[in-house]
Image (cartoon, rainbow, N blue to C red; front, side, top):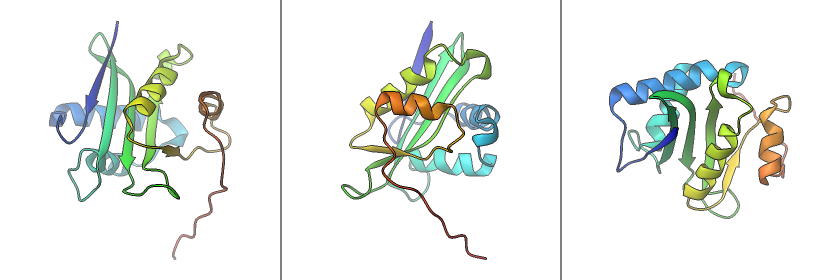
Length: 147
């Protein structure tokens, strides 16, 4: 049976739980992930352990083992920029294709106060799940990286 935990400013995970979530995301985001330090920053932002607007972290467990995790950060904006950004979502490699990612995405949408944005690389197979749920591609993101 899958159990979902919700962490936020009022219900923070223990240090061990937070480390488990960060490690899980680092491992299971595969080539679409970031450095462990960056994942940790996003989790701290969601839990308001840094100067932030907050957000939340979802963790799905089966037999006390993490099988999926989501990190959503609040942007502090509304209208022209969505109120939330889904920063990370990952499902355990051995559990993919069973609808767990979709369940976690729908739970994140339900919990989020306001609209939700996410960034997805064009070759990420999860892109099709996001489109099925109702995400649209309104913009082409461009970035300038200062030298």
